[in-house]
Length: 404
Image (cartoon, rainbow, N blue to C red; front, side, top):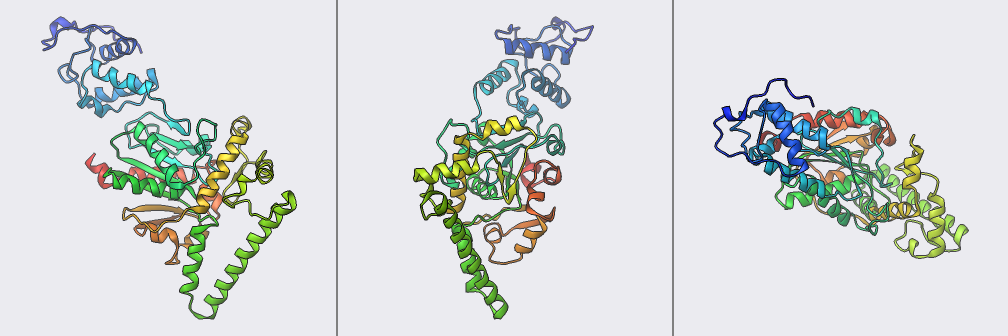
């Protein structure tokens, strides 16, 4: 940044601290930034921001320059607790040393707004387009997640609760004190639900909880849902509908087992917990998944083929398959009383009218916002349909934001 042509001499100021020269590159950079913003020729690392005449405007300018020059998010409000260059440099150097886990994507790190953390869907990958990101304010921090183990840096996890723990560690590394906005795509909404439950148990302040077209994978949760529906079925129409649902499920399971049997000689469903333990079945599953990126409800093609190739290694496919099994095994009897915003397709909004739907039981205090006809329309990251709604919701103050 260019320095003003006339700077005030430090000797003309009655500062309580003696001059201490910068010692590191970060301190030197901060001293230059402060000198230009305060228009003072020499600022020491122990000079107090408020003694120099600092205010919220100058704090915001300093925050913006730090982000621009170092690419590190520094909240202007932190200056209240750390008002010297020495203290701020310690924060920035710690932040530079603290590497985020590879399964976290820093999509946008600048700005002082409450950060948003978006959990992927059943495929385990999140590739937001430029159009998707354009719906967020320039100063809205946004982070995403990829399924743990997709890059071989850790073993894939097999429980939704364990994945939620991993993601919370990353969230707390970015912002230890909160609040945070949490969002979850499709089946990933259940990871988000578990994250919200754990943060509540820790007594942490939550911002918005946003679930985008939550899906119930075929498995324990759906089986329990179907049992509840059958138990409360009334009248011939309900009874016939329940019977048809059971018949459809039996046909689905038979078809999948038959497909695997024809290919491998093993009578087992590819979603079975033990399917990946059988070498022939595992190789067949990897071969089926290789070369295509399956998203919830269909096949999604990404414009950036290099990114796609990067993530479609056998390790990435295996991590994605284990994630699907985690969703298959997952169920919960817990609930949260926090307000939850559900961005739902027209199809799901009709399903949510059922009082026994797992989403209604787990998140009873919810508001449904209908967006898109089909599931893939609603969860898409190539349009700004759901990101526009999320930003609008985050712009509306919550109780924790008002107190922030």
